[in-house]
Image (cartoon, rainbow, N blue to C red):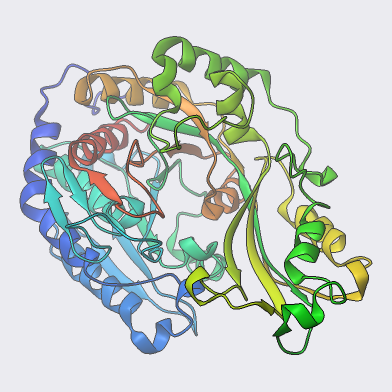
Length: 483
C-alpha cells in the first residue's frame, strides 16, 4: 500500500506533539482527575453497581467532556441496553481530505478494579495525586486515560490541519469483569459501524515495557476465571473435637488444585492448555533481550532472592509470560484473619482462581476440562462446587501491513525518540479476539501506557503523563496515514 498525497510527510514538524502536550495539561488531566474520584468498580467487584450509579456517573462525566471536544461533526452517545453496563460511543466523520481513508475503531474501558491493598502514605485509590510526571489513582492508566488519548488524537489532527478517516471510539464498562456485556453491544451497534468493518483497530488497554518508545502488543493470553468451594461441615467445630476425624477443607482444596497445576513447578496440567510458541515470537523476544537486557522484564517488585518461574533466562521468562498457561489464586473466603483465628475446624474454603491460557487455546475447551478435573470424584466425599466460570479467548495480532509498520515507526522515532518495538503480553482483552474473528482483514494497533510501576490492578496505580502525551501524538500520526 502506498501513501497518498494528502497524507502528512514523515518529516513534518512536531506540532502534533506540541498540540498533545497542551491538550493533556489543559483539557485532559483535570477531567481524568475527576474520573479518578469516582469508585466505578467493575460489576464483578460491585454487585450493586446499578443501584450505586457510579459507573453511570463516570460514563456521563466522560461523555460530557467528549461532547465539548473540538472535532468537526463529532457525535457522542451513552448507549444503554437492558441491565448491561453502558458504553460510550463517539463517532467522528472523515475530514474532507480523508474521505478515501479506511475507517478506524478505537477501544478503551472505564470500569475499575477495587483498591486491592493499602496504598502508600499520601495516596489513595480514589483521590488523584500528581507527583511530577506521574498521576496516581485507580483507573488513571487502566484504562481511564484511553478516551482522552483517542479523542485527543483526533482533536490534534484537526487542530493541526491533518486529515483522518471516519473514526468510531467505543468505551465499555465491563472489561475488568471479562467484558461479559460487550458482545451484545457490538451486535446491537453493528449498523453504526462500517459494513466492511474497520481498516484499523486501535486498542489502548495494553502495556509498554519501557517508557522510551511506542510499543505494540503482538499477542495476549486468554483467561478462565472460576470459583471453587469445598465444604466438609455444616458449621464450624472445635479443632480438637474434629481434627483427625474430619478432613480439613483447605487440604482438600489443595488436593483438588493439584489436579490442574503442579504445585512444585507451576506447570498447568490441562491438555487443552498445551501450545507451541511460534518461532517468530521467540525471535521477537530474543531481539528485545539483546537490545534491552534486564530492562526487557523489569518493574516487577519481587522480594530479594525470589527465583523467577518460566526458565532461567530472560527470553524464556518473556515467552512464559506471554505464551504459557499460569494459575493465580486471586481471592479466598472462609478463612478468618490471623488476629481472629480461633482453634476452629472451618466448614468450608472457597478460592477464586484466574488461569491465563496461551493465545491460541480455546477458552471454552479449557473451562470444560478445568471443571471436569475439579468436580470428578470429590476427595473423601466432600461437597465440591465450581461456579462463576468465565472463559475469554486470547489474541494473536496479524502481521503489520507495510503502511502501519512505516507509520508507527515514524511516530515512535518522532515523538519518543527511539524505534518502536513489539512483544507479547500476559494479560487478556476479550474485545480483541471478538474483533479479530469478526474482521479478519483489519489491522490492529494494540498499545498502551501500562509500563514499569504503573501497577494496574494493584496499589499505587499511576499514569506516566509524558507517555500518554507521546502516545496520543503517535496514534494521531498513525490515523493520518491510513490508506
